[in-house]
Length: 46
Image (cartoon, rainbow, N blue to C red; front, side, top):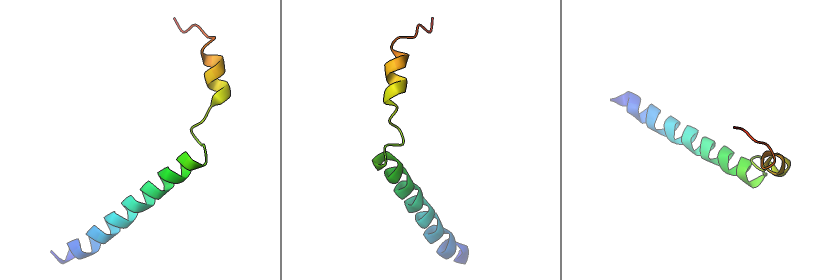
């Protein structure tokens, strides 16, 4: 039971670090691909 005292804070810290990293990538426009979207509309993937 004492291990939970260690594991719960570690999991919360890692979860918060993942959330901060995700928010940082969204704010720094890592997922924007304007040229890819513009070219993708012209391609026929059938």
